[in-house]
Length: 203
Image 1 (cartoon, rainbow, N blue to C red):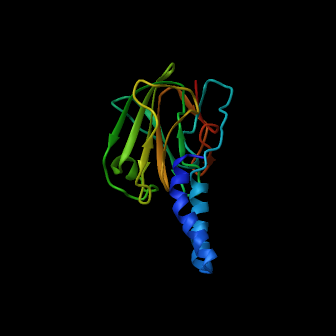
Image 2 (image 1 turned 30 degrees about the horizontal axis):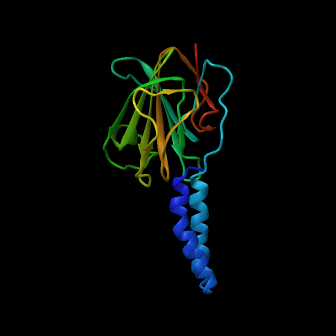
């Protein structure tokens, strides 16, 4: 459980219990349900990455929206987009082992995370990770509901594959850019789990 979950759940849970004791049953039940949902949203299960060191794992739980050819800074590569519903785990993880060379936050709009333009125009936070096989970039993207991007790492930190790096609150999107030299292992519509599902393999 992410500790912030207790903070957000405490008030509705306590008020809900008091309401039930005062026989405001429906009101109390709604508040208690809300508190339980908040705790559910902030869950943080343990994950074990695949043993194969050539695999690149998903940075988030969710559904694969698209896999497209996309250049970055003149370098050819591919972008994979993952949509996180409010029912998915929202803790984000590093897809590869390496060193975080920079973290770039950019303000932006709040289009629905499923829209294609969200990748380029929404508020976002990008991690640049230099691995032994090349640079990988992944970014947390705020959506229409998600308005809070949380980062637990800093530039210069080393990360291992599947390590927690942050979270996005209440529905969102994550993109990962991979350079040439990888073999994509997923397809649009597929559901993935952060830290364990294989997105691609280094050739």
